[in-house]
Length: 309
Image (cartoon, rainbow, N blue to C red):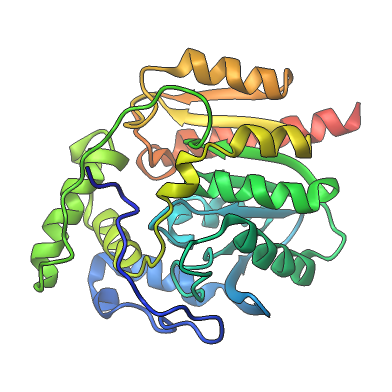
């Protein structure tokens, strides 16, 4: 059984990222909107003794920090950033071991990842309060971050949440690492998108495939041990930050066990909004971007309303 976090072994790096440039397929026409958005970002590399992370920012206003999922990068939020940047200062790191950031350590220690990210938040937001969004594995890492900077988090939206006590589906993915030809690997990436990320095959466009290929082929950490330890509940109970959650109704990992997820969320935060997006899978923010963006906006507004009471 393979998962999206299937990884390759590379030397640990805590100084310079091994992936500074855009991937070789960045000149593909379907990837150009992603490359354009990358070039429009304000980029900051924040180094610590434990490693460094690359941060990108767009827009201005209240700070909104977004953490991508396993085998991902900032581009997991490709369809959110231009919209949200109209009202927010959108801040998105590549998690350590992914995208352009340096490796964390061979064990992908989530505590170490969280410390690297907290250092970046100190640099970029100072004492400013911010809202946090975590997609899939990013929700797990966000929960570790929340324990370090809880007083500064106005609310935490968990998207396609994993790593807690609820039943989930096992998903088998196709291996691509032994395939030398990029186009043939792309076929496998499309198959994996359908297996675990996007519910409707008709919505798997070339941009989604290229994002998946770019991200998966630069992924250097195995996130499965952290997810299997189910740390989300203890971390969120310890931090006590306001919560909300969004899932796609056809999430390949979560469906059909949404009653369990709703009850789990209410036990953490009785005021938390629970949003279920119609006709969407695990990568709900790509497959149903308009509906997701509206749901996320509702969640962010709910945090502001709660703070005003």
